Structures are given as C-alpha cells and as structure tokens.
Image 1 (cartoon, helix red, strand yellow):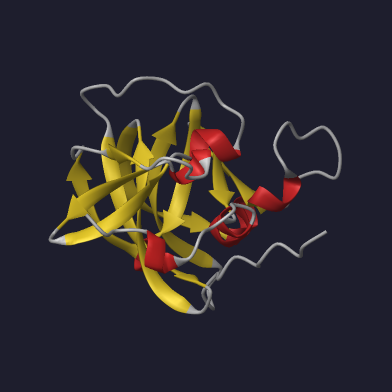
Image 2 (spheres, one colour):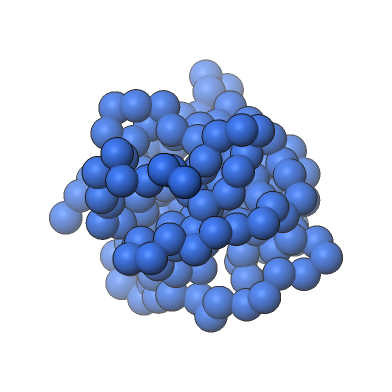
Length: 167
C-alpha cells in the first residue's frame, strides 16, 4: 500500500484551501495549488483515455486534461449544473509541474482549516480507497475531505505525453 502524503499544515497548524463540491461531498485543495477557477469549457473526449481524465480542454491556448474526481471516489457521474466550474490546479506528475482541470459541482470559498479539527481516514469502514484521502476536517457545516491527488493520479493509467494534445 502506498503511503498517503502528509498534509502541509503551517507552523500554526493551519492550511489555506479552496473548498468545493463534487457530488454530495465537500472537498478542499491547497490554495497554493490553485491557478484559476473558470466556467465550464468545451470538452473533447479522448478515445482510450482513463475514465478519470477522459477529456481535454483548450485552457488559455494549452491543452489540459479534465479530471472528474467522481470516478476516483466511485460516485455517480452527473451532468453539469449552472454552478459547475473547472478548478485549474498545478500538481507534480512524474516530477513535472502539470496543469489539470478538476470538474466541480460548486466552488465555495477560500478557507483556513485547522489541524486540530482534522483526523486521518479510518482503517475500516471507508467507502473510498483509503490512500485517496489524506484527512477529514470537521467544520460546523460538515466534514471536508482533503483528497490525496498524487495517489489518485498515480493510480490512473497514463499514456505517453507525446500522444496527447496533437490536434
């Protein structure tokens, strides 16, 4: 089993994140990884691509993959709503900074989370793959999931980067 990366809490036990909904779950990504939040863009399906990243978009003149975290977490795929957005992140993949769009159902806010409100995923009883969740953080309005994006993307089969984006 792969070790889930640790959450980069600051010296005061705080973490600045962007919170958003995917299905019925509220997730959060570190604010430092966010590049932009954009309205949905026309997507092009990529034949043979992994279901998690089955389409690409033209983002500011660059072709980037769109990831649907519903696939990683075994949630039903639903059509977009008027609140749906793409959160463009930059994350290391194979040692290279890579832009990826995360399809969301609704973006909420930039918020500060506290390590004192967090807990690791349980060893049993979790309906998702444990290595896909770094931590849960309790808030007054529910629980926020901090996904382990590196583990999710590492578990996704990839083809050579030379095969993508030639149109």
